[in-house]
Image (tube, rainbow, N blue to C red; front, side, top):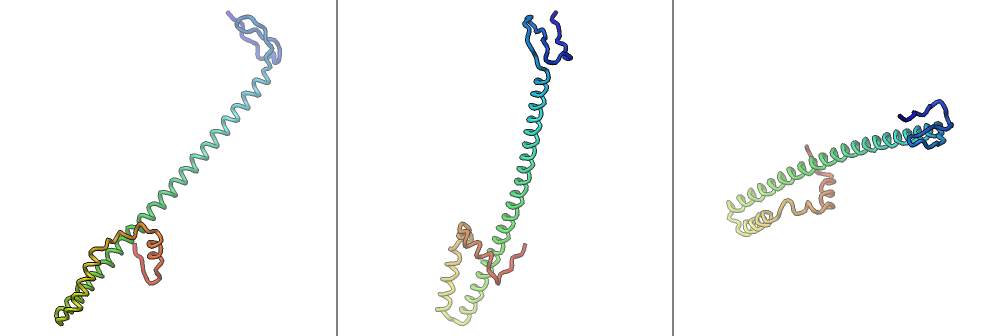
Length: 144
């Protein structure tokens, strides 16, 4: 049975398993343990702080994406309203031109209707500058 070192003999010789005598500075061991534990606590605190920062960043980015989505969907809704209104006006004017037997105006309106139908309401969404300019139009009211 091996003898357990007496911890009250700080810095004195202690017997070890294998009966080799070794000087153990328990104060130094304790100091190293405290330093190691202190570093561990600091790392845990730093990592906790980083996790909190990441969660805050994630929440902010999520809110930003939702806000951008809402603006985009609102803009698309208004684009379709404007497009619908353009078609309505063109067809109303076509009706007037046909009642007046004005073939030239009717042909011009039919061309306009065809061009409007060919154009995609999404064609300019890839152009960020166009979208930003549309959103900044002073006479336009955007509703959500």
